[in-house]
Image (cartoon, rainbow, N blue to C red; front, side, top):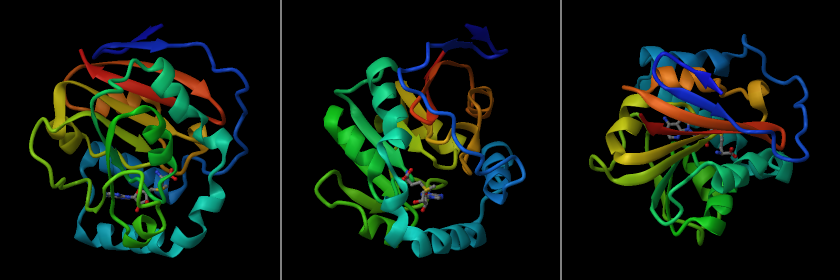
Length: 216
Ligand SMILES: C[S@@+](CC[C@H](N)C(=O)[O-])C[C@H]1O[C@@H](n2cnc3c(N)ncnc32)[C@H](O)[C@@H]1O
């Protein structure tokens, strides 16, 4: 168990069958730099949004082939051991082609999926959840709209998450390739980036890790 200046971080034992990710995206990867900039410096604007949407539009058709059960294992484990409000209203940000939405739909009663890329959304199954095209830096929802907000390999927009999450709500942060995920922040950074004080629990599962965070 560790303690940050803002709250406690509880590290649970690894899930059975964890896999060390192959080297893929180190600290100098451009997406890693963008991830830090967005989380800590608010370095996101319309030009960046257009560029990122175009990148993922171009990857959309073959994206689902990249996803496998080992990469998705952290989502299922988070829902099992993360003390999540399974009967609440969930928002998945950066839902892509729906791999995380599928895992959520097995356990969670209500999910809304949002992504910037029209092509990623078009390649996601329609029946799992309502799919919205939008920018997580300016969410089309009122304050206190959700019991949980999940990001699977998605940029962290701290202020908007804080705004739409209900007071008792849970943030679920998943990196499916651990620190080799291009869009990666360690637990301590997620805790620091979110406004106010948070307590976290975290564990390794599959080839990645999950973290769930509640306001302290
Ligand atoms: C690395 S992909 C992950 C997709 C999916 N969660 C998965 O793990 O298979 C990142 C996704 O976040 C979306 N995204 C990036 N910036 C976004 C933003 N500002 N608002 C909403 N979605 C965004 C991209 O379009 C892309 O679909």
